[in-house]
Length: 120
Image: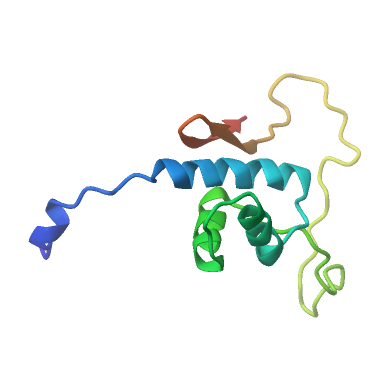
């Protein structure tokens, strides 16, 4: 079966209380200033008295799902050969139940960690 014996006995280590606190602070700061980057948030956490370096913050940032909001260059220019799909609901009158469906995924912070909420 090609399964290593060490893989059978491995149990993942949960995040420490300090990391969960840092993730909570990072998440709250993201809602206030989503345009802050790696260096600015690391400096902000250090000013609060937490020992955090850029590598640790980057790992926590990936766990929380932080994506800095900034203007990316040339995002509206369509490449050659790229198919543009039309918006199909533009002139469609919605007149009955189950005619149109939509889905949304939201990140919800909790007291110990986080969860994703999906709505259909």
